[in-house]
Image (cartoon, rainbow, N blue to C red; front, side):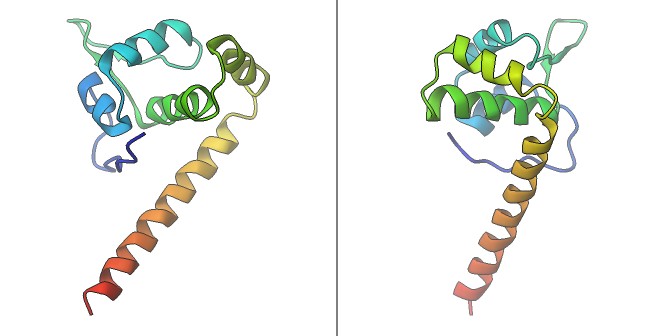
Length: 115
């Protein structure tokens, strides 16, 4: 999965941006939206254009980890998410903090390399 950084300036992302950020196809995002209706709930504009929030993207990253990285079947991933429904916010917050730390470390590394 591509580990692209999500902009702090932007509140909504269209499906093509989310696909690029996560390194998956738009078709896969639509499919997962049908398979995980409790977790992936992008808002839709008047023309049906999906608008994903940062929280939606983090939920999709969690699904990606369960299905693609850990190799769980969709039913098993749904069960894990269902069992962890109340505790989902904490892991997502931890992931976000770790990504920010990673970004800071990468910036420090670049600064040191440029010296």
